[in-house]
Length: 472
Image 1: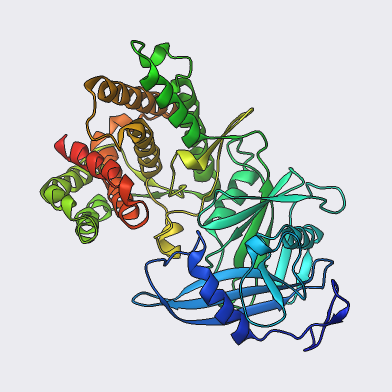
Image 2: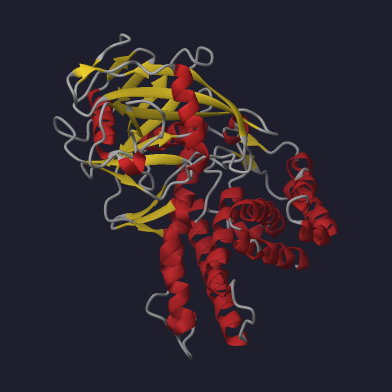
């Protein structure tokens, strides 16, 4: 692209914006985005570390940027921001605009319908543009992509539905090398796992960080007519709490049959990942659980009331290590890593798991390291507890009847989930209660920090859970 390329929407010369101009504009715009991971820190610097000018489209010129920013007080972070640049605004561009001085109109291409369509067509066409590679393993569309619409639910990525047949997911925060979501989805696709939407293709960046390409985006089958597991669970709890004298299994929206199926689906995913990617023995149980008290100490700096659980958490970690050392051999494998009801979609055909990226706060290496499958199980059990307690969390006084029903719903669905998991896995998670409790505590500690930093009014949910788990 030359310094005075033609803007196809206007037919007049459009000056090429410099890396410094784009970095400054994005740095001002970035902190307000829901997927930005350093909202508590001011930015003291930003620079473009990779940039590709894509072929001009009817919508304008697309600059695919990878930008590194310097949050004050923490490590540098890298984000990708595909930008649509044109000489005049369109009817749809205002909400997606990246404000900057000068005559050019700059928008987030993924939030701009015209930009998203242009990007989708480039991905569907495949091929290579400079350092960008558009790799497709299957073609879910015939000819050109005709329509797109963004999904507005993600927090760490941005997704666009293509013709209601495929989903383009762009990973906003970028780490060198392959993304775990692509790795695990590819393995499960090859295994014909029914509990994952098949992988159709990827977008990769070469030459940025070493010899291994970096995953920027993925395309997989779109799960049409799907319901979010978290919303389904909340609806079931609310229906039960609204009843005057019915038990959980007597309410028409009883969720236990679904959690039974979800447990079976997760066990199937674990089995297929074991077959595809192998296992490794848990050689040092003490080392695996030894860091639990340290995690609590780090969390206490954010949530001071957790200090009362310090002694009990150390005992829970020691008990889990003893049980892992004396029970049947414990195997580690690749797992989901951040499993909760929001990562499960109920389709007409069954449950699907999504977003295999792992825990957002973990390092890339940690996300790809094999771990105990009960860590996923504990994540889902914690999510069921969240759902059961969520309608009550803002009540200053809890009526005994409501507390009883919430606890009944949680207990019933946790048991159903473990039963469904055991039916496929051949081993019941409840058979190793010390290990399972340690992973639930680990997850609850993570939740407490997350809520304190992002949703302070929710922090009572994990704090209450830690109190109950340590009381046991």
